[in-house]
Amino acid sequence: MSDTVQPLLPVAIPYSRARFARGMRAGRWLFASGLSGTDFVNGLAPDVAQAAHPLDGPPQAKREAQRLYANLAAVLEAGGAAFADVCRLDQYYTTPAAVPPYHETRSAVFAGRIPPSTSILQQRFLYAGQQIEALAVAAVPGSGFRATHMDFPPGYAIASSSGYSPALACGDFRFIPGVTAEARVAAEGPVDPEARRAYGLWKGTPVKLEAEFVIERKLKPSLAAAGATLDSVVKAQVYLRDPDDVPAFNEVWLGHFAAPPATTIISTSTPGFTLAELRIEINTIALARDGATQRQSVAGDAAPLFTGHVAAVRAGDLLFLSGLMGLEHGGLAAAARPDPRQPFFGIPVKAELAAILKQAEAVCRNAGTSLAHAVRIQQFHTDLADLPATLEVWHEALAGAPLPLSAVEVAWLPVPGARLLVDLWVHAP
Image 1 (spheres, rainbow, N blue to C red):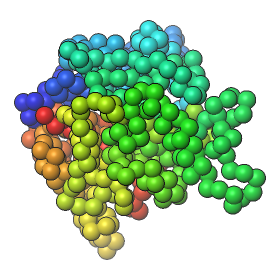
Image 2: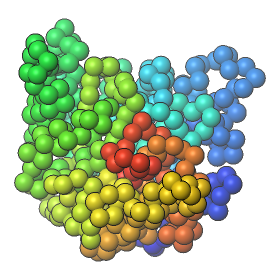
Image 3: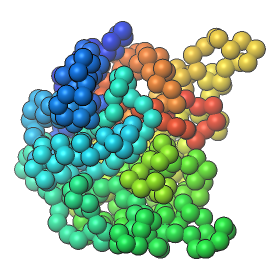
Image 4: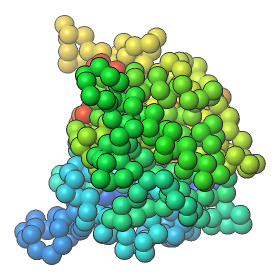
C-alpha cells in the first residue's frame, strides 16, 4: 500500500490471508466501505442477531444500523473526522422493511443533517441475516476543505423520513443525492407524468422517459443550484432493475455529454427503489463550474465496458473509474469461460478479476497513480460464493495490503456468463 494511503483499523477476513480495511485515509479524504452490523468476529454482532431472543428490543434492522454507525464512528475518529464531515452515503438493503428503522437511526446520528444519499434494494450481503450494507465518504476538515450542506429548493420533495440535503459542497467537489423519476407532486405519482409513457404500448420507451426526466428535471437543476453543471460531473452510478434497459439508457445518457463522466451501471433487485414502478436511479459527484480543480478524462489500454463511455475521470486528487468487467477483445475473457468438456477446471471469477485488474492498472498508470492507492472497491457479484477467490487475487495484487471492500450480490450483470463487476475509486496524489 502506498504511503499516501493509510488503512484504518484493519481486521482479518475469516478463513483468508486477506485483511479488511475498515477505513482508508487518503490525504484530505476518508473512506469507509463495507459498513454493516458486524463485530468482525461473529458475522452479525451477537447484540445485533440476538439469536436466543431476536424479537426483544428494537427491530433487527435498527440494531444493525446502530452497530453500523458505531463502526463508522470508530473509522471517522481514527481518520480525524466526525459525522458532520461525511459527504456522501450509499446504502443497500435486502428488504424494504429495513429502511425505516435504518432511517430513524441515521437521522439521530446526523442530528437531522444527513449528507446526500442513495438507497437501493439488493439481493444478499456477506453475513447470514444481514439486511443493510453501507459506504461513506468524508472530508478531513482543513483550511478551505470542509463538508458544507447546501440549502436550496431541489425542485422535488425530499421525504422527511429520508431528510438528506439536496447537495453538499466540499472544496470544489459537489455531491448530489440519487434521483429518480418519482413524481414531484405526490398526488400525480407514483412516476412523474412527464416520465410516464402515454397510453399505448409503443408510445415511448419507459427507461428513456425516466432517464430523460431524471437528467433534465432533477439532476441538471440540482447541479446548477450547487454551482456545477452536467459537463462538470466526474462520477455517476446508475442503478437499473432491468438488463434490457441498458442500451436505451446509454442512448439517453451519452446524448447529454460531449465527454461523459466515469459511469458505472449497477443492477438492482426487482423492485429496487422506493417505488416499485421506478426503473432507474442516478447519483453523481461533480466539480464546481468556477473552481480550480480540473476534470480530466483518462483512457485505458482497452475499450471501456460500453461504447461511448470513458475509462476514467481524474478530478483533483481522486480518480474515478467506470465500471469494470473481465473482458478481453470485446467479450468475456477466455479463461473466465469454463470449458463445458471439463467444467471443473479453472476458477472463472479469478480470471475475470485478473482481467479487471489489468485494465484498472493501465488506467491508473495513465492517470499517474496505481492500484496501490485504491481507496474504495465495490464488488458486485452474481454469487457471493465467489468472494474468497477474489480475495486471493486482491491479496496478491496489493501485496497483502488491507482491502477497502464492499461486496454485494446482484440480480444480473450486463455481460452473459459474467460473475463480477467492480467499481473502483483511487487516490491520485
